[in-house]
Image 1 (cartoon, rainbow, N blue to C red):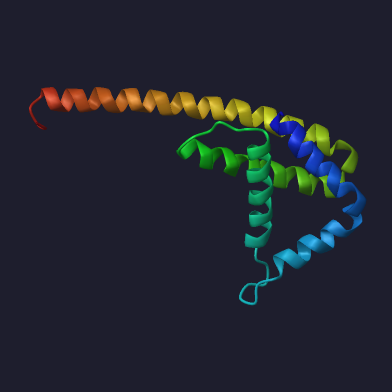
Image 2: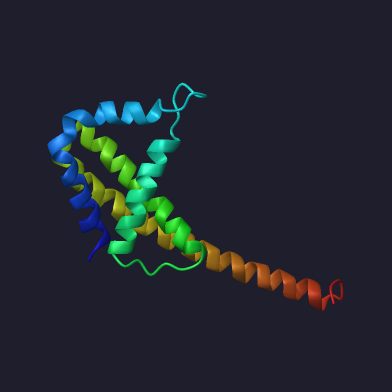
Amino acid sequence: MVLGDVLKARLKSNEPVLKHLPEAFALLATSSPLLPADPIPIIKHAAQVSNQACWIADSDARESSWYTRRASVSAIYLAAELHQLTSPRTASTFLDSLLENAEYAEKALDETTLFASYVWKSWRGIVKSSGVLL
């Protein structure tokens, strides 16, 4: 199953209670006695949804990419859910555009990481060959 389809199904499950979601988010955000507006419960909600969606979609991310994948999916889902509050008809299209842009960003980050590792190995080799490090 594709991740986008899982997230769209989750957004669709919001439709029957859409008129109550702003109040639900407000209650989540004000649930802390210490802070007037605490975003942590809302972030936890998005993290739980993204974790379940990645698990259902059989995400094969491993090690540190597991965390970055779920963090980016959490941010995407939360943005789509908030967009759904103002424009329910375009939420699915908005979700698709966010997922597509995230894919490009993820590829760019992977390529940057690979380039940085090559640069690091080159500098380490230069320093080692100069006799500074043994």
